[in-house]
Length: 68
Image (cartoon, rainbow, N blue to C red):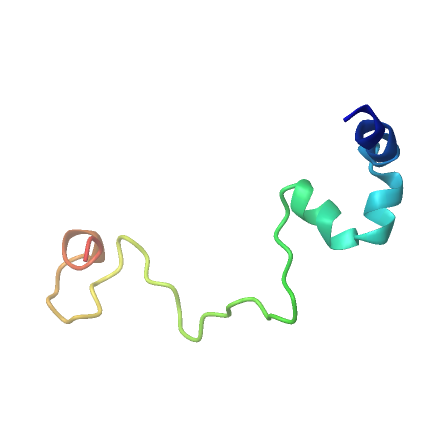
């Protein structure tokens, strides 16, 4: 076990390990890593809480369809 610790101790600082695996540094830091993916882009306008409901009821969105 001590041999394994001595062998892995050089990687604890992260310099060598993160140079070899840069995506692991992003994962360890808590950032999201996208692999060949584009972020989602909304096609229409976002519906606000106080906007009229798009279902046509005439109520505000927060009182009609927001919880559905």
